[in-house]
Length: 458
Image (tube, rainbow, N blue to C red; front, top):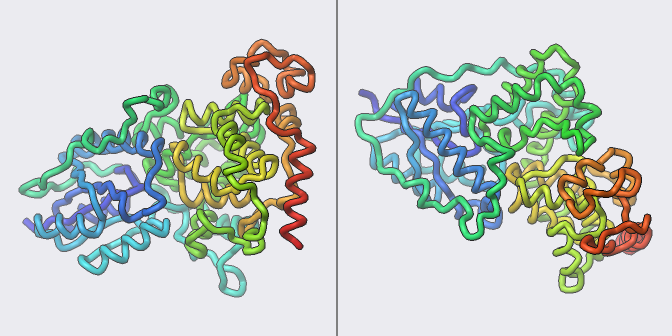
């Protein structure tokens, strides 16, 4: 029997359309391994909601591997050190894995490559970063021309099917017990409601895709309506790689409906990863240097407002509904994410990085590229971003996108209010005593934000 090879799983927890797995099978007996590395990411260690998802996704992956005659080996520690140890223990000469583009994963790949033969494959994105270039040969900074260039390469190659069998080593290495990693919250169990909304794992991902296929034609309109919930809800499955973007693209294409708008959302994901390859500090530094001079409120002054925002107690029903949905389910409707982020940044004048960190800990789809690029888009500080001076009006946004039913679901204090007053109960003098007053008026918040912007511009 040939020497075994290591299959390094990270955010690619699937057996279908898995180029690293296919190559490893051709190379020899396969030892699939997942390493919980809380050292390499440093300040970007996985947040609480993501850890909940990871526990269940790893459970599902191990079950799928065992059905193929294999199993998942779990280890904890620095990726490079653990892979070197496993290679030495089992005589493995090579490691196969998929490319990842977060700065810590790229650093880890360099470290692993110095100690063993690391072979990386594509499959996490529609196209590897750098595939499309501007006419001058540079990297696209603006999304719209980037999307046009990507569309010229679409559809992506057809996804490959799930493998039938996986060759096993003569002797399996020791594995940690998943429960010993304490990924699930216990006291208190703040994730008790997550399983109502989510089924982590490859099978759950494919079910979500199948559910969305018949709805994709309504997506351009329905995605903006929180009460309808017209989004795909595929983001955590894509982040953890339980389904490939190529699979999603082709499955949606098979619906024979116009899926252009949704396909461009998949391209946005590629765009975000392209940006973090160019600007690795996107999650912690303004992409536009001029925003370093913006006079954000210090949390010593604004801590109470920040706490109210996190708890869904701002007095703005659409914002509060989103923040409460986030806490209860680990997810928030995309339109409401923009409204809540804009409110924090502009109405409360709190640095976008504080909001991004909260999302990092509470979102099951917390993704360094998407989270960072989206927050900086709202803040106006991103490479391609909305103007800071375009300030979302949460009350009119709530009415425009018919969020009454959404508010009733997540802000029960307001459940008895009619559609014409629920978006702004305080202005209509029908605010229940249990619901807070607005922590700042819309006009007051807008003027303070614009004054800060003028000060930044000098």
